[in-house]
Image 1 (cartoon, helix red, strand yellow):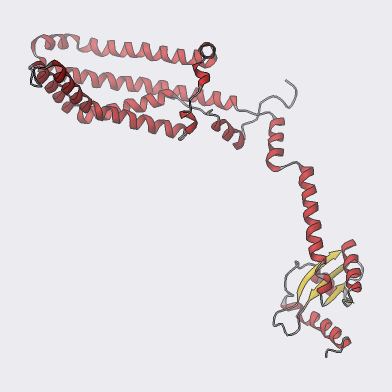
Image 2 (cartoon, rainbow, N blue to C red):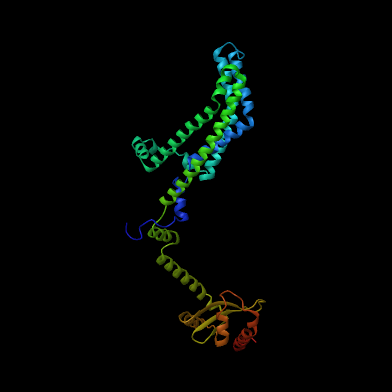
Length: 344
C-alpha cells in the first residue's frame, strides 16, 4: 500500500458516526445473553418457590381432570396458566436483554430494517467461512462444551439424591430440581459472563482496527468537513470585499475624515443635536485609506490631518463610539469644521 494510504490512524468522530449509521459497531451478543440469564436468575431467586408450587398445582389439576374431562379444554386451560406462570421469567429475560443491547449500541432503527442480502444463501456461506463466522463458531462451540460440562458436574454432585427422590418423594424431588436449576443457571451465568467479556474486548479491538483511517483519508475528510482551503480563502475574500463596500458607502455620510496623513484614514460621523458620542463609520490603511480620502473629497467631506489622533482612532473597531478619553481631541476637530462651515 502506498505511503499515506496505510490505515494507521484512529477513526475520527465522523468516521465512527458513518459506521454507526451503517450498523457497524462493537457488540457482543454474549453480553445480551448474560443479561437475559441475569433476568431469569432474579425471577428464579425471588419467585422460584412460587413457580414450583404453581407448576405442581397445574400438573396435578391437569392429571386429576380438575380442568374438565374434555382433553382439549383441559390442555387449553393448562397452557394458559403455564404461559401466565412463565410470563415473569420471559419479561425479566426480555427487559434485561434489551437493556443490555441498548447500552452497547443504543437504539438503532436500522437493525429493524429487512436486509434481503442476509437471505442470500451464497452470502450466508461466505459469512460462515469468514473470520467473523469462524470466530462465532468457536464461541458457540465453547458455550456448548461449557454448558454440557456444567450440566454434568451439577447433576453428578447430586445424582444419587435426585434418583432417590424421583422414586420415593415427588414433592421433595421438585424442590431438589429447583435447587439444581438455580445452581446450573448460576454457574452457566458465570461461565457465559467470562466468555462475553473476552468476546467484547476482541470485538472492540477488531472494530477499532476495521475503522482505522489512512492519513490521506483524514485529510480528505477534513477538506470535506471544513471546506477546500482555496475555496474558503476565496469566500473570505468576497466577504471582505462586501464588508469594505458597505464601509465605503458610509464615507459620503461622514462628518469628517481624520488622516495620518497618507497611511491611515478614519471617517467619523456625528449628528448635530445627538446626545451620543461621535461614531467611527469607516477606517483603512494604505490603499483603502487612499480610497477613503478620495471618496471624502469627492463628496465634500472635510479631511483633517492629525497623526496622533489618527493612530489612536485606528485601533478602534468600525461602528464603535469615540471613547471618553478622546472626546476633547475629536470635539476640537468638529468645532474647527463647524466654524469653517459657519455653523458656529
